[in-house]
Image (tube, rainbow, N blue to C red):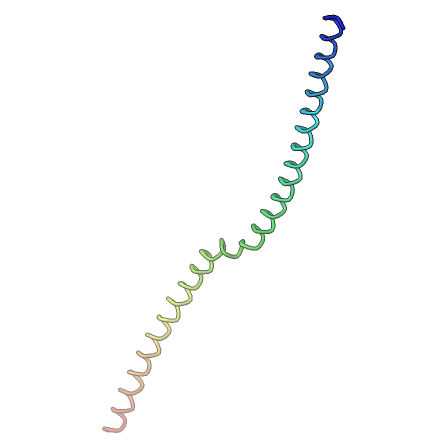
Length: 94
């Protein structure tokens, strides 16, 4: 076997190794793409399921407004009750 033959064999071996490495890289790239698609699907589901949490700020704002109005109504009711009781006491005195 001469040097030319040895060089061709070594070159062929290098080509085969490079081809195997490229195939391994392609396989891993496809695997990563599949995992990324799965992750994107899961993230979309998580986003959908947690959307109500992000709306809690608006819900709290509305609840605060309802509480403020209920407090006002309670204050007005107490004032009316005081006036009515005061008027009844005046009627009873007369």
